Image (tube, rainbow, N blue to C red; front, side, top):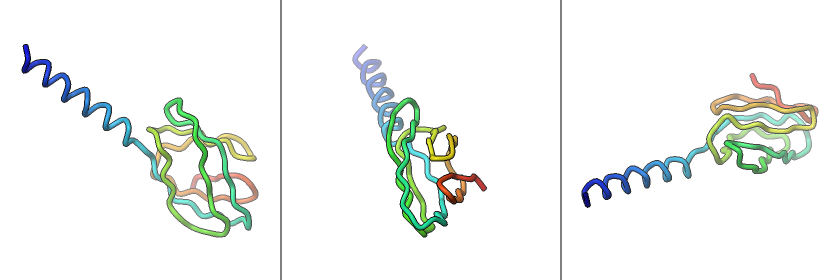
Length: 94
């Protein structure tokens, strides 16, 4: 019985740690001369994402995908691994 309890505890710990470290990463090019910070929801968890002005970079969003980002031009759903173009306050997935 003690061995079963230890295995169950180990499995539960692995599941929790894999969920806690879940994240999606996207690469973006912000062609606008202003920074943007938008709200995002990943797996029911609300967060904010920021894109620096006039730069190309990678961004990691905590939580498992898909993530919905609310931009000035509407919602964009991201699953991870996308290349994004930010222009005129909106995101276009390449």
